[in-house]
Every structure is written in structure tokens, then in C-alpha cells.
Image (cartoon, rainbow, N blue to C red; front, side, top):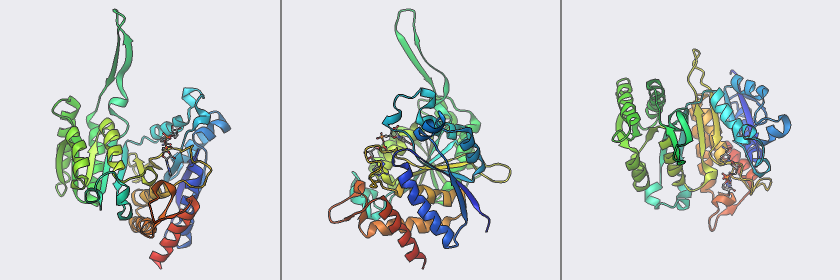
Length: 368
Ligand code: NAD
């Protein structure tokens, strides 16, 4: 079995605590013979600034490029509130995304049966939810030029951000989304606002053209404002959604919250495949470094362990192992084990390490 190379970047705050539980799962995967991972760790964020004066070193970037996938914990915290802008902890994350050319952000929203009550939506609306939002990550209004605030002759200030998309940017994200939809429920909703935005018109026409290569997938076009309404009304009508950077930012957070807790949400950011079929990939929880609970051993590691699960599925073609890990997480929750962020009446409160141990215990049980 060829060894798969991972780079682990635990980062700041609760990052190292939740990453320790990823290492626990990796150790089990290796011991059980289901996969062979070798991994090294390095610094990113505030801890990297403390050590090297920058949020990620060139040496760590080299390791990221050499790895088959990178798993990141979280960056940031009040300690680094006053460091220079270019060296702020988030700059490490942005450099990883930029230098690895990660243009596709995958944000699943899955509602575990045991946690349906944690959602602010009604049980029947979220029970069994399994939705994937694919967000374009490197184009659109966050990067388009001009992007400026100018003072006019009369002294009034005017701000402009530019929503800009090239055909190739839309085509490559559409292909990622169609491929994902093909491996999921074979339904893709493309979300834009072609009724009022020229980028929406181009988006719709390019996605429609790419659909010619994916005739087995049911494609619908949904206006972004309607999509927001539908996500709250009946999110289960969607299987896979593809959308631009801005709408994706908002809609993925909206969908995520229907699942209840930040501590449960993984994500993936993918680049383009090279000639050998190798795709740069970064996996990370959606949550931040949670300085309010850092060092207390109470952080929920499920989002970061779930990020490893996404790496198994999307970087290593280990779909069976990813399914097993999902089942182990669901099993632990069904047994009533909860970290404090998802605690409910009558359940058993446990810490970060106990949650990791319980998930590995469930992996062993399910695979025996
Ligand atoms: P946060 O996600 O760190 O925390 C928000 C709330 O959710 C806190 O109450 C926290 O305790 C809780 N929480 C988050 N993750 C949890 C987990 N795994 N288990 C249990 N509870 C959890 O967001 P914030 O407080 O706005 O930001 C804190 C720091 O993290 C800031 O410096 C911010 O810039 C940074 N941040 C980093 C990332 C990233 O690394 N990708 C993302 C968001 C925020």
C-alpha cells in the first residue's frame, strides 16, 4: 500500500487540541491496515508569527505543496490582535489558499439524527439533511478590481467592489460541482442572480454548457435570494449547490447553521488536478480558534475529525473509510455522548480527548 502524505497544521487556540484527536484517528487507520498515512506537523497562524515573524513560513509552504493533503486546525486569537496586517494569523490561511490555488470550497451541511433538536429549524425540516454547497473561492467580488474607496471632488466618499468572473473560472467550479453531484444524489442547483447581474447571465450560460457533459445530472437554476428562502423552508430539496464566492459565503453559513453547532462542521478547499491527477487540497473545520475555551480540553473535535473524513473521500479515494468514520461519529452521538457545545438534557458530557477516544472505539466496534 503506498503511503499517503499529510501535513497537519494545528494552528492556534483549540487547534492543537482538536488536531490531537485527528492524530488518534490516523493512528487507528494505520494500525487497522485500512490506510497508510505518514504525516508531519508545522506552524500556521499566531504560533507561526511568534516563531518566525510570519503567519506561515516558506518551509511550511513547501511541505504543504509536497503533501497529498493539508489538514488545518484554526488560526487567530486576541494575543495577535495588534500584529502588523500582513503578518496577522489569517494571512497564513490566505497564503495557503492562494499559493495552493484552491478555487473550490466544499461546505457540507449534514444533520446527524441525534442532533436534530440542536437545530433552530423544526425536526422534520432538518432530519436526514445531507447537502453540499460548492463555493467558488478565488474570484468574484472579493477579488475583482477596481476595489477602492475614493473621495470625490465634492468631498463625498464612494466605494466600489467589482464582481468579475471569467468563463474558465465558472467552468472549472461547475465541473467540480457536477463531479460531486454525480457521486452524491445526481442533482445540482446552480445559484446566481441572472435577473440583475451580468456575471449571473454568464454563470448560467457556462453552467448550462458544461451540463452537456453531465447529462445524467439533473440541473436547476435558482436565484440566490430564492435559494436563501428555500434553504430555510425545505433544505432537503437540494443535494448539491454550486455558486459564486459572495453568495457561497452567505448561503453556506446559512445552511450550516441548520445543523446546530459550529463544532460539527468540516470543509474542504480544492485546486485543479495536475497531469498526474493529483489535486491540491486543504481540509479544515469551519470554526475558529475559540480562545474562550482554548486549553480547557472541552472543544468539540468532530468538525476537524470530519475534515479528515472529507480528505479520505476527496483526496484519497477512501470512500468506505470516510463512510465508516461518519457512521462512528453518528454512533457516538446516538449513544448520548456530547461535548459541552452540543450538550442536551439527559446526555453525557465529555471532553475533547474522550470524544476522540469514543469515536475510535466506535470505529473499532463497527469494523470488527
Ligand atoms: P470561533 O469559531 O473561534 O468561536 C465562536 C464560538 O463558537 C465560541 O464561543 C467558541 O467557543 C465556539 N466554538 C467554536 N469552535 C468550537 C468547537 N470546536 N467546540 C466547541 N465550541 C466551539 O469564532 P470567533 O470567536 O469569532 O473567533 C475566534 C478567533 O478565531 C478569532 O481570532 C478569529 O479571527 C479566528 N477565526 C479563525 C478561523 C479559521 O481559522 N479558519 C475561522 C473563524 C475565526
